[in-house]
Image (cartoon, rainbow, N blue to C red):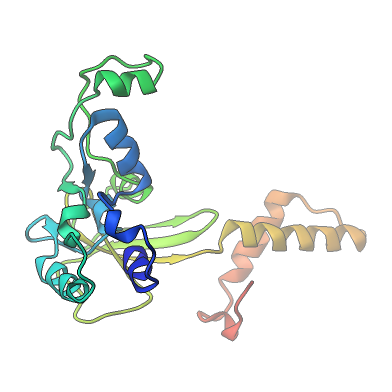
Length: 225
């Protein structure tokens, strides 16, 4: 999407692009010389076909049709990093890479495919098989459900990613969670103190969480900002 927007805007550097990657993929490249990423990381760049364990060929073809009228010197697949799954060797630390780490690690050690924290969460909670899932509640909140089959249609609220082994995952992400909750808890604690009631922070959070169970599923139509 970022690339296509740059094309639509006519940004002058587009014709000179040699390689697209994520931050994790870029660091991996600088340490190993390999232009590869884990399949979950790759799914954040372009849709993945879980059957082939690679970028979705039909969608690549559609994207290249969009590019045809732009007369660019490359196709999308020329720019994307190679996709690897969990367990595959993703190169080894080069002498140049070791220098970037100030000699902390010796050249020659093997590397796993670069993955982000979503894959870490799936693995840590054993939510990597179809019909499993996990929920993360932190500064933001998201749920990830491993699918048995592809979604039947587009849902704009759902991001499609994969497990580190390539299974399709439906992810829903919201920006607000504990940062928002902490602000409200602080407000209520300050109000209680102003009214002459001291309440322990732990007890306050427990009270709010239990009270939330009594609320309507749609929060009565309220949206917090």
